Length: 153
Image (cartoon, rainbow, N blue to C red; front, side, top):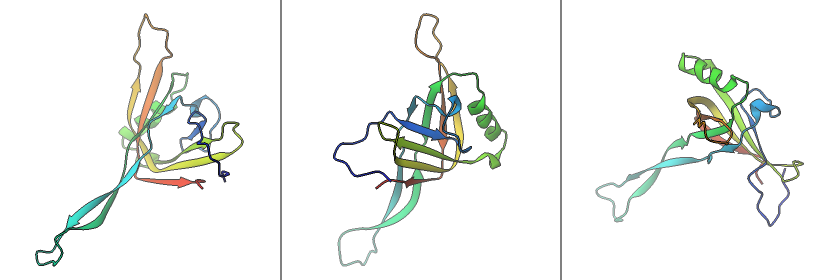
């Protein structure tokens, strides 16, 4: 559990568990994670004979935004293999993905975002540039059904 503090935590110390329980080693190391977001739709409703001239807001369905993870290309086919299994009908390949923010000294877990029933929906390698000096990147976009937050105080 994180201790309360006045200064916000920095964004650069995070771990990714792709469902295998591992957050160490190159397979779990990512350079960037896009914003993690969820929302609830609202339906507006009003009876024609309602005495008040305003609508009711009725809670609708939950919607979780896709998350994109980026990392340098390493000699590992883990991300592509997971994507390949899903696109070939592997419905059993859904995972619970955990993205954990740590304190600056790596001693405390600040928050964990839990992506339930996550599956890769997009895999990208590159760009590649013969005149460039940047690290070659690959990215994986995950769709998931529900977001939960653990450890947040």
